[in-house]
Image 1 (tube, rainbow, N blue to C red):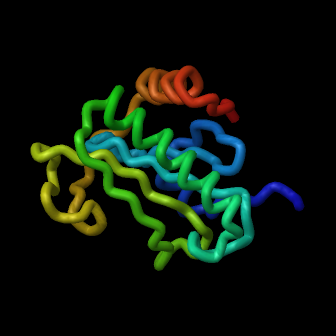
Image 2: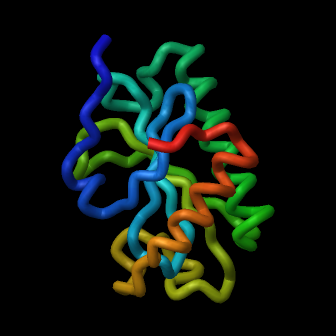
Length: 139
């Protein structure tokens, strides 16, 4: 199977950080919250349609991101979703939440105000965290 192309909307909204064994790792450009997006290397459109082995791998990779958000980025709560109503390509949102974030307790979708972006140094720091702690490969 040829490598997938990541949807243009995801690339416009995110920094591309690297990839795990199955998923490409993106970081939403809005720095108000640590909002990662995983894009599995698959043509399947819905998470629940993945074969069990791939599904398990995707969940394990999302869990690795979750642990970084909790342990290194200081967010006690994780929101996790695979919605895909606007971008049809299978992608998973792993979002760090805090009671003092700008849209707490509402969902981030449609409630997160425009915020500052990440500078290149911060993107590099977050990428380094993922490489050191969870064997993500840089792109």
